[in-house]
Figure 1 (cartoon, rainbow, N blue to C red):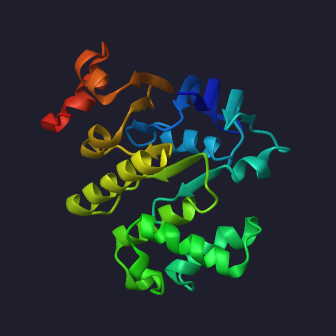
Figure 2: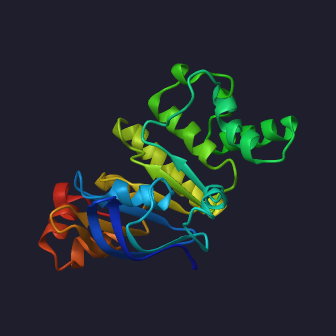
Length: 247
């Protein structure tokens, strides 16, 4: 599998503030890649660099074969989709209108085609019957499904999910994991997921990158099972063995 995202010796953070140093890893096409670690470790910062919200401080970052620069920013943004932690749906729009929005802004489809595309995406996330409902009328888990459908609207090469399980009960969270696996299996989608939820990590992850605030860097890279069973780092092993989660 070819890499769809490449980080080489990246320093992550903000002007004057380095949070992570010398980070290198690849995300392969068609895999679920997890960014994890404790609070404040830099996993969300890395994701913000990967989706183009903030420029990296040093190193090289390539997404979908293109390096992030001011010149390539708009083109690259159309190659990715993002689901933010809260879902970030527009409350004044129906679920269908939320999913149609990227198509209205960035596609050449006519109104009928946009509606058909959006309805197909809602069906993919098993919410076609919620098309005409407002975000206030659906549950938290449903909002996140709609947000995933919207993130997929432009047929992106990679979809980023920021804490998809946050605020969800275990059953709803597990159902969302099932949806991610379904989309990966049926559509070959690539996902980058920020989470620290072990059940989700063991269920959906192909690869993980783990970060540590104290060491200001990436401290582990591999499958959840490899990091749980074979890591030479005590902190990593304890993280993956807490709660005796097995996968």
